[in-house]
Amino acid sequence: MFKHILLPTDGSPSSEAAIRDGIRFAKSIGARVTGLHVTPLNHPSFHDMQVPAEVLEQIALRLKALSGTCLSAIQAAAEKVGVACELVQKSNDAPHDAIVRVAEEKGCDLILMASHGRKGVSALLIGSETQKVLTHSKIPVLVYR
Image 1 (cartoon, rainbow, N blue to C red):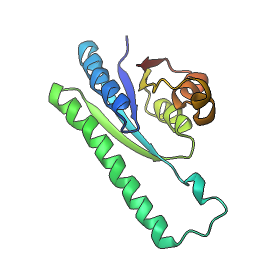
Image 2 (cartoon, rainbow, N blue to C red; image 1 turned 90 degrees about the horizontal axis):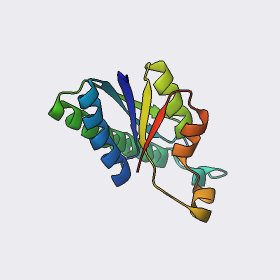
Image 3 (cartoon, helix red, strand yellow; image 1 turned 30 degrees about the vertical axis):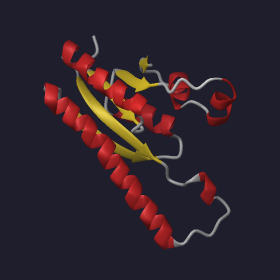
């Protein structure tokens, strides 16, 4: 049924669990996976500030390293069980938008992603990237909790 699964990650324990079981699921149905990590273009606290170029470069290097760590974990897990895996890093201040776009561009037929399970005021203030993906995606989304 599903042949190509997008596995977005933010590096959190919830995402790590979703990736682990998402790869096992892909193996069981003979699907391939694409791992995705999205980094922000601009940090919200930078708005209306004069941030030195050196600081921005340091942040960009750290975000690149974080992406590498997150994506290499997906690659290693996929290789361990013999699942074909492609890795994608994107920069976007709206991660849900990048997730939906990559899924469409890569021809994924399922997005499998974690939900952090925020409720109440926390969910309203922080928002849920998973909820936004559910709202904007035409591709089926499997939420891992």
